Amino acid sequence: MKCIILAAGYATRLYPLTENFPKPLLEVAGKPILDHLIDDLEKTTDIAEYVVISNHKFAHIFSDWAAKKSSKITVVDDGTSTNETRLGAVRDILFAVKEASVDEDTLIMAGDNLLDFSLSGFIDLFNEKGTSCVMCHVENELAKQQKTAIITIDDDSHITSYEEKPAEPKGNLAVPPFYCYRKEDLSRIEEALEDGCNADAPGSFAAWLSRKTPMHAYIMPGKRYDIGDVKSYENVKKIFA
Image 1 (tube, rainbow, N blue to C red):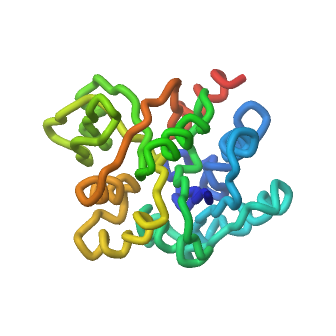
Image 2: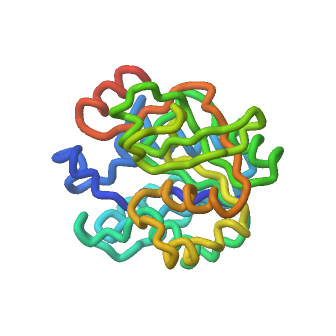
């Protein structure tokens, strides 16, 4: 299995901290956010390679970090230099797949989230079910449901509906940007884009795929911390300290 890490955003809401530095490498509890995610995977899984997809502005910073961190990390530069010219998460995934010749089962995750639990359980479910999978958590606030992806599942954790930013949510399970894709499903990204899949939201591909083939969901056993602005970053630093 390989791991693609989405890190090509510009994090404009975190300026000035991220004006000249990538959000996934901001420090929390003495080490970069990305180190928390990768260190967990290194201890609990058999990920063969980590492919970090960066924009051109920050690619050299990621390359310097990777050279010190691990020989298993490959940094891919998507060639964009501004927030306005970004490719979008789904096109970045496709770019990383092609540039790094990814042709196997793959964990895809955002590089700017922190978890207080291990990702190993998610990968165990993926191996158990034999389908592509997403992570999810309970979200009961309507306003937040309308700003994310919402799924419903049956008693076997099979996804029965999947909507991006629904005006009237069918359920209360929100999907953060963590996905496990079978290699045969990952190869369908171009098909999805041609079929009108939204290139910006990473969950758009998963939503499209769920209508084409069976998928399952892993209910998170703990909390996920999304660092969106300076206030949330300061709060996460206090929690992890």
